[in-house]
Image 1 (cartoon, rainbow, N blue to C red):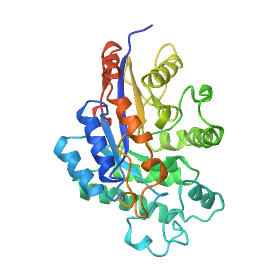
Image 2 (image 1 turned 60 degrees about the vertical axis):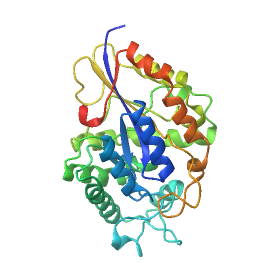
Image 3 (image 1 turned 180 degrees about the horizontal axis):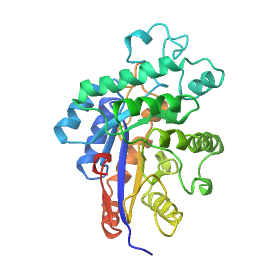
Image 4 (image 1 turned 90 degrees about the vertical axis):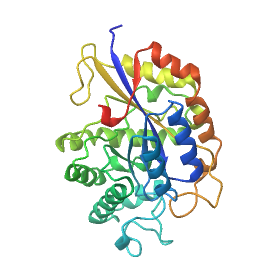
Length: 308
């Protein structure tokens, strides 16, 4: 096996969702278990999350959200194609359905994405070094073009492309979820050219679908990393312009303490995944000392996007 320097970005998603999520993510960061976070600016505890990131020097990017809760752009809060009849975003699957029916106005998508970048800057004092999509909306048809334009306009260099090596071999993932993941994968393949044309970059390897929630363990994390490393071409890693002999991996995680309704969410209260024990399970797995000691033995260095 060639000696590769592996840079691992462990990103805690949904920072700002609720105080208990914020608490769990900060604990994980201080324990050295995550190295990066992604902020939901329309989350009910977003301002608090930004303060915590500043206080603890946590590298922070933007988790763009068009599917859960309320928009941050004032003009879109009342009358917009992005909202359902209850006045909230259409939801994870509802957004995809509305998009496939041609019901979403892309100029409103762009307006909301820009408003979220601006609010991020207002909360943190800087532009996000990386920006990805809550529930992977950023790789969807049409949306991917607008998303890429916004990143290019703001000079945001990095994103996430959720194509996970070895995903197809994960027989513990229930079929309904696997169908969703395979849709995300197909959308991601179709997004690569768009992001490349706009000069946007992403890590060589993405992991996180096969290790979510109850499926996370020290061994599933390692087998995902091993499966990914095994698929690298023999000479150099694949994605845009990797450093010589260095492979970058992003591991997407969702640690936190379970939300307790009615506190939390992005405008309409916390969802089921946020209230479940699975968040806590991720937190407890990520802070295990044996995971961290394995990083060291394997020459894996935890970092954030701004370290790339």
